[in-house]
Amino acid sequence: QLVEAGVNVARPRSAYQNKKAFYKTIISMGGEGCIAKNLFSPYIASNSRSRHGFVKIKRTMSETSNMLGIGDTIDAFVTGFEPADENKSWAGLVGALEFSVLLRNFNGDIKQHKIARISAIPMDLREQMTEVVDGKVTLKSEWYGKVASIDGQCISARSHRLKHAVLSDWRPDRSAETCIMDEDFMLSMVL
Image 1: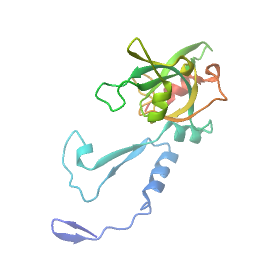
Image 2 (image 1 turned 90 degrees about the vertical axis):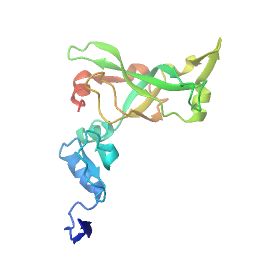
Image 3 (image 1 turned 45 degrees about the horizontal axis):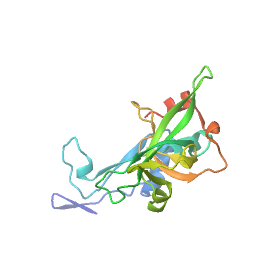
């Protein structure tokens, strides 16, 4: 029971009381995701829902790929890095990795395309991949071209990169030349 305006109100139990099952049902029907709200927080008209108990839960690329039967993550290779901000606890180390794929258009032409920027890197890995040359943070050369499985929410409409990208695992069995993505598939993941 909930209390609304000082009165106890009985709410019917939903068939989707299990939130995860509800989310999976929405995704299996082709939905983008859903919005969760704390039932005990008040509704406040605002452009910013995050401060008022609302949370977006969007499908990931792996969920979409699984639905389509084409795998579960994207394989991409390291093509660059950004040094950490000076105010971070990992200042003086690699701050983020840039990943690319080989994008194949409808004519079969292939070009390199930056697909993600990932900053959630374990500290020990940051230390392993960082080299300081002439006082500047650089990525050790052996990390360029390494392949990893990555995931994210969807593809951004503007930059055509993964939103909220995460590193799943490293793929020593793959090479950069095998990280091919069809442009049609990438564009279909723009939500």
